[in-house]
Image 1 (cartoon, rainbow, N blue to C red):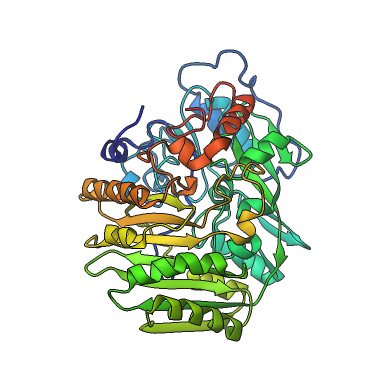
Image 2: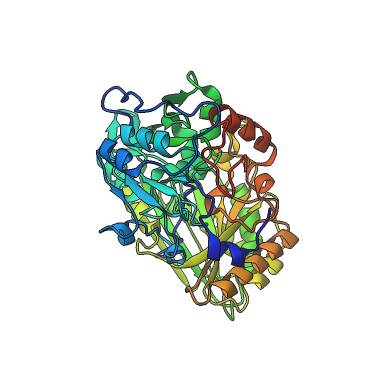
Length: 492
């Protein structure tokens, strides 16, 4: 049953399971672990047949955990329950387990499956608050944050944050395409696909995933790869967080860290439609070494900037940028071009790390849309940004059904991001809904699951397209009793 955005924002988390988003508010420029030993034997029989009823035995679970278990009213609970977005501060989980080991995750699943909603939380950036379920159990995997880079492989715990991932990769001279928000967790980013500033040249984050350790609904730990649990491996690459189990560790294939050139072009008022219209044709024709986005900042007038990065030097980039400015007829009021290393580029694009109050959603551009209509949607909407991130290039090489990520043929994704407060959230929610509907009318359909939005029309098809049915089949195979259910789970 669909709910309107206002109702959801008040009640978010009633039925949820660990989906997290992949980006922060636009700032600056543009805007789970393998066991160190054998798995612990189950302390009780894994779910089979009918799931148990009644509340979990919290004292028994606490005694099994190497980490902590916080209940309402205990010291630390009020802080531990907080996610990135203060809109969900009123969500009160029945318990928060800090998972220090993969055995902790197993114990939580065995103790609570079928009894309360389960939600794995990595970075806590879920746009819908799904990682903080009301009256549910939060399994916080932040302590599973190891990052080991050796040769061309990176083994990364589900709780690792992007700022730490990038720092470790930079020290090792390696690169992994990922998102731009420093406090986003690697888990949610990867499971939803992983759009980022290197995507056109290197692909999505999930395209580099070679294997994952997953705690399933029956409390087992499985390894998902091309040769082991291949259906699960397929689903984890773009099928969204929270749907199939709790990933505790990822193994990625990395690339040698490139030297990059980053840039920002700020355009004068009145040029946004010309820039966006030209940009759509321009980015499609660019070599995959160039990634760029357009950011439309709402107001009167709408402000516009184009930012990006280039795997190459300044001379080659400047030629490509001149092509954009000449064809758009818009002369930038400010032009910044800078040579940086991999880590420097990631810092150039990172958004803010402080908690931010916002409402967000998304659409996908497959073929060029009416630029004037899109710009008009931002007119007069102070505090709203439309972040239009270029895709194509390496992202488009796999077939649409090669992984769960459906939008292989997309020209760009559009993130709608509106700053708000708890007092003005209803107004912001209505505004976002209007923009999302307007984007569809302008020719942008679909949606990106890492900008998850309960009010998005036909969200399952929007996120997963023709891959939705296979995702449902995989979820039923590994979670036949829908233990990891939540409001936008693939079998909900």
